[in-house]
Image (cartoon, rainbow, N blue to C red; front, side):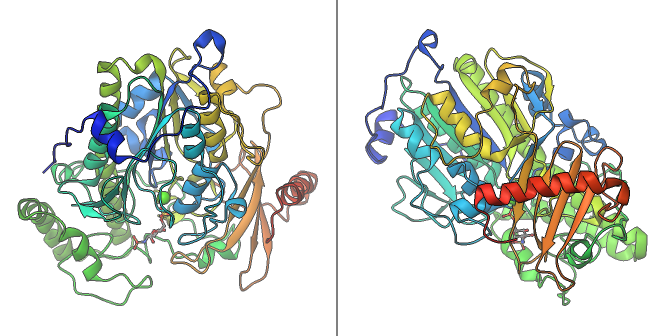
Length: 531
Ligand code: SGN
Ligand code: CA
């Protein structure tokens, strides 16, 4: 049901897009300064590093991602890339502003972004770049600084999604097809129609694999025979953690809806902790055309009936839920991997490989059953950390980097590439020096990272927290809970799964004090106003 992209001519695009400001400077040649490479930033929504086979996690061993792996083979895989607030809208605001959430106003989902802040897209455009934003935008402001855009409404829809574009008169119009494919098509439409004499920055932001994990119809049978391994922490009882882990509402066991999330549409509504209803699943499925819907029913109907007849309970039921969740999630990833392949192929066949940097990342990480959870938000590794793979033309290939990278770095990096000066307020740093060293840290690279999560009250009931991490230790301060404020401390070398909080362990007293001092320094230096 894939729709062919409209063949738009460059003249048409320029006629419909806002007029471009004159370039601040002519594109310098390499010997004169930066290369002014083209930039392609591919960002998925909730894509965990566990689900990219280049990262070597047992989960993805059985569901490989060959195109993302190719990118890693030809570039650098970053193993210590993190976000500053593990949630979509804040992460996107950070990408556009290069600022922490409390600095750009976007602390939670919903409203917040300070639109008086100049976006990196505006700066790139002033610097002579053509700019495009395709897919999930997820901020309550208009896309600004883009010559070309096709953005989804809010979280977006998987089937027959609606897009608002530079020439849709502010309206969202439905397009037949699957979101991941249509986003790819619009990205290629931009590449086809741009002015080839100017560098470009293209953001390709997928909806997938966001909840409720609706795969393309052609992938509905994928992985059905595979039993995916449970993570070691699947049965975490939170006895080694504080209140936040106990009061969250993101367990596969209690918080995943049998109908909305796990697609047992034969069941009737029952009260759920999250309030999800059968109608919410139906609304998503009703967007399919009738042929696709028939395929859906043919795939899930027999499986659902077999499940209902089996009468699974307890541990068996929990493991069944895990398998269905993971299979649907990975089916969505298959489409994303195909999309990466299409974009790489376009670059190859259009002579762009030598002058285009390709970045693959997610708006944050995601729990794939670790600690019994789905969703993100916590400063624990699975959600704090995000996948990041970068292919830099002429750069070192097949490298793995342990440099500390944070999503605050994208804006200054892209400005650096464009030869445009980054605003002083930006806290992040260009990672070009890391890339030039094949992933190694240049001297004076950051040793600590600050994190802050604010979204409470909210669906998954994760307490507010801020914290600081170095490469071995992590100090997290939870606040606003019923049991009072408290901190947790983890030694990731001894306890990579973060099962045992060591805050009261006297042997760590000095190390805890050292991180506490760093945390205090961050709060003062960054003007943090709540904690
Ligand atoms: C939706 C989801 C949540 C998810 C948030 C934030 N519920 O509200 O499970 O945590 O998005 O996700 S759903 O019923 O709409 O599926 S984010 O990626 O946008 O930050
Ligand atoms: Ca997300």
